[in-house]
Image 1 (cartoon, rainbow, N blue to C red):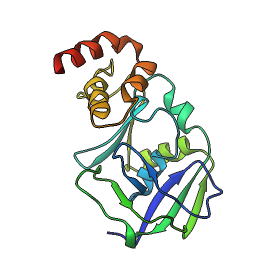
Image 2: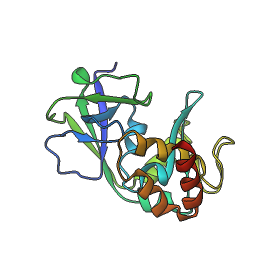
Image 3: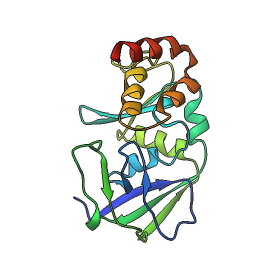
Image 4: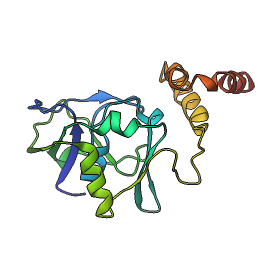
Length: 187
């Protein structure tokens, strides 16, 4: 692992990085060995309901799931914090680009301001470090109607992420019947 890991945030006032709980249900500090990945996590929106971030055949991709979501999430400034990598580790349940630390807090070594995250992501695409799929374009394995989210969010809910299905249906109310049917089939 590198000596430095990166943590993206819209907040530039952090003199320490503290843990939070995400889809893995563990209180930890999330980071990445990749600056590009940390840029992707600066934007605040509805997470996987807005975008798909993946590593396909070694290529980092960002898929815009709904029109103009990238603008609403990333067309603003943000910060990349550098952290000492010594307490970070990759675990099997994490995405390949993620590392976590169970420290109570970590002091950043450095931070870099990006005036416009979307412009920074476009620059990374031009360098070949990322492939951006603007709506409605997407890889073949991602359906245009985003129905791939149904099973994923049912799984989140069943794993203990209370409210995952409500979050899904708030953004995609057209999935209500499909979710209801799948839940009934599983019971």
